[in-house]
Image 1 (cartoon, helix red, strand yellow):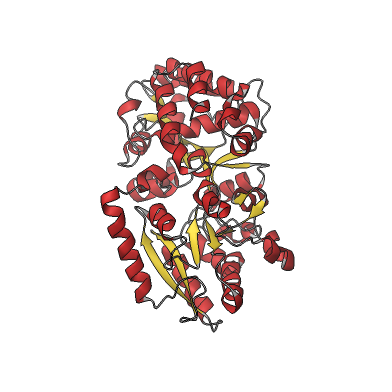
Image 2 (cartoon, rainbow, N blue to C red):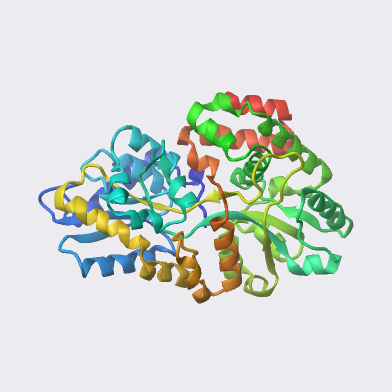
Length: 435
């Protein structure tokens, strides 16, 4: 499941203890720091969750082929980002580490802490070709690649409840007009049109991201990343804010969305139980429903694309979300250890690695994964998701992951106030520009 950055923030009183524990764990592995001469191993950090078993397996395979061994440190998910940031630049920094690309590593890039992987890709063109271009590029900073995709893709998808649609004689929306008509259809049937976890601002952000993309294209947010907060003054952002207020006014999210959560499965349960007809959520919603509402996941869960909007200039095939996670290499790793580090991250391009991801329920970001998706537990869903991303001309990284961490709190505040009616559309744009 996606972990928004704000939930990974540790209190100052516990951060030092957490870092000490991580440092102790690394010391226990005999690390001498990045490129340290007293240890011929590579320290690799990974975010610990249900997918970590895939990384454990690749470490075993790599260590059978390399004189320089990988020692995997599984860092508990809560606070991973803070631990990563605190360690970089210290003797306890990892040689290779898991990250989200974008804003999660931008500060490291500015300080010259990460290895530019473009020379390695130039020497081995097949490495670059091994991944879907939009996903590989989503992890780039200023046009340079500092990450190799190493987990499944996570686009935001418009899910729908098949049974609720069947009862209403309705079909999934193919246009914005279809979507607006469905709001009225389901309201008349006493069903909330869209489940929305209004207590978790990152779920509302998905709506804003898609609408900005559909109105103005991926270039709108690209300008924000490159030119700064003043670039929010784009007509697509104001149109998006007006559309959000229109949706809220129409009752698209019901009356109680402000008190519904995602982290405790509130929105997903309403959706699975037929209290809501649709749910805009990351691709992990399938795994979430399988774990908590398995019968619904098996036969009642449907999926489709987010529609185009009237007058929009964005490509309706583009997607938003978390393209994937990445391996990055510490720039201080030198010599034979650097060669070994590059060989290790290349393992993520191999079919054995892709097969492990698929067996875990993930969809690999590799360009040859289509032929392997028959091994997924739900091949139809796997192929839909893969084709959605493969055909997308742009894959915009979630704003709260793409921007530096300092912007996440004011971004969330502005989005929640827009949905809750505390900011009008013009005020929303002003709030973003003032971040």
